[in-house]
Image (tube, rainbow, N blue to C red; front, side, top):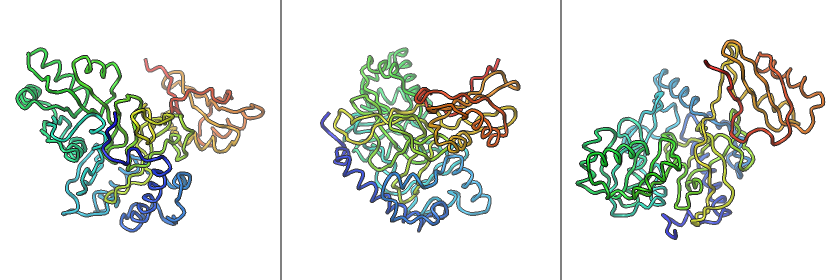
Length: 416
C-alpha cells in the first residue's frame, strides 16, 4: 500500500515526537485556562516542564470511573453535565452531546473529523465517492457519528442505517449498493447470513471497518472468503479513535493526534516496551481536553514500524480489561494496592496476586519477581497485611517469569 490519508502518517518518529510534545504543552496550557476540572487536576503543574513522555508520566491519570464520579458530583451540585471537563457550553461550538453508560456525557465540537476516524477508514480502503452503510448505533452514544464524521472527511456518502431492522437493512444494501460497511463485526455476519438465506444480493459490499467488539482472525477470514476485506478500529466514546488496522494486518497503528502510554494497571507508571498494561490516552482536542485518560483497556506496544510505511507506534489491539478489582474475604482488593506494595521494595520488579480456593473460603498468594528471596517473603507479607488488611502468602519467583498478560490480580477461584 502506497497511499496515505495525509503526510502525518509517514513523518519520522523524531519529528512526530517533537510535534506531539509541543502540541501537548499547548493543550496543557489550554486545559488549565479553560477546563475547570483539568485546572484542578493540573494544579501547580508548570506546563513548560512537560517536554517529554517521562514528564507526562508524572501527571495524574484520570480513569473512566473517576470521570463518571466527577461528572455526577458536578451534576448533583447543579453545575455542568460534563464535570468541568468541556471547554465550551451549549450552542454553536457544541454540535451534539452524547450519553454513554453511567451515564457519562461526551460533547462533540465542530472540527472536521472531530473524532479523528478518517485515517482509519482510509487505511481500510474507503475512498471519496464511496457509499457507506453505517450500522453503528445512532441512539445516544457517539459510535455512529465517530465513524460518519470520518467518512465525510474522506469524501464518502453515508447511509445512516443504525442497528436492528435486518430485513430493511438488507433491502437498502441490495438497492443502494454501498461499497463499504461500518458497524460491529457480529451484525455484519448476521447481515451476510440472512442475505444468503434469503437470496439477497449484497455483493456490492467489499470493504468495511468494524469496532465495538473483538474481531478474531477467524471471523476476518470468514468475511474474506465472501469477498469482503474487513479491518478493525479501536475507539472509545470518551476520546474517539485511538488506533486502526492497516493492510499489513500486523497490529493497530496509533492515530496521529493522540498520545498513548501503556501503564501498569492501578498506577500511572509506564511499563517496558512490549509489556501488557492499561491504555492511557491524552487527546489533543481543545473542546474536551482529557489528559492521561485511563481507558481501562489492556494492550501492548509492538516493536517496529508498520510494513505499509506508516511510521507511528503500533499496539496489539484490545487484550482485556485493566480493572481487576476483586473481593477477597469480604474486602475489595484493587491493582493500585498491589502497586503500592511493590513500590515499598525496590528489589521487586513485578507482582501478581493470585486468589484461589472457593468463594467464602479463599486464599491469596502474592507472586513477586525478584533476583533474591533473602528475607523478602516476611517483609512483603507484612506489607500485604498493612495495605490490604488481609493475610496472604508470598512467593518469590525469578525475574521475567510472570505472564505478560497485564494481570495484576488473577482470580483463580472455583465458582461452582
